[in-house]
Length: 284
Image 1: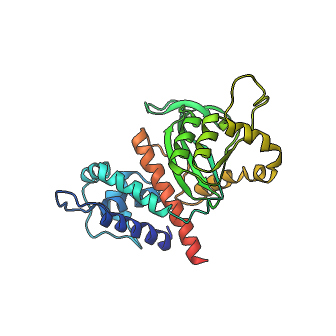
Image 2: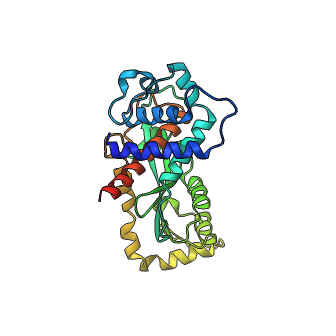
Image 3: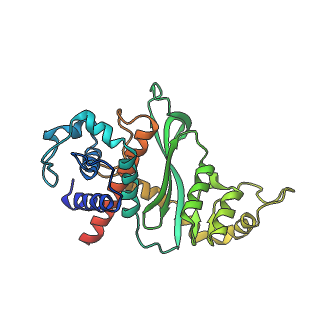
């Protein structure tokens, strides 16, 4: 791992720890260390038990003292550490928003079909049905994953997209693929002052059932939005950048199972991705 990337991650962890209220009990090992150990293990695609070994550390991060394996496992699952992890993502994703263009899409994360993971469900993936999880993301034109959800693979993408739009409150244009042609999404974007665009289904707007005015407007403007149509594929490039570097979001490892652990793992991967973007901007 580059020392520039790790310095950005560790600085964000320390700032978040200072901003959070202090726990009622003083712990021997602070939450900054616990969260840094977890992110260090995710950076190196290693299980959590690996982070409790002295030989796992080198270069930019060498803790003087380490908690035991059981203590580290217990602390990293604590709600305070998980809330700090989400806040670290929010801070690193807090780039100036130009309110121009954004994307909503899903990124499937399949696992093996014979897995005993009860949270992994069968749903649509690349090439057909698969079993696993899915990352639902709201991505800006600059590649920043502002908001996201991690769910089993069978959860409806339209439902997750509606939640993301309500959370993001976009004021610009949001692009989605044909799967997101739903009146609720058009209305949610319009209520925030933005505009949602998705390829209309065949015969859309030609029936006798009352339609959403925002969806009808998008259907009428669809033939003239050719430049926006061409940009729809950029979200796939951003997902590719999320997974194309060492420590990126590769296929889920064998030890990343059950929904809470998958959510923490994906959040950590997105944090590393945002730190990498910031490091690249500073170096340039």
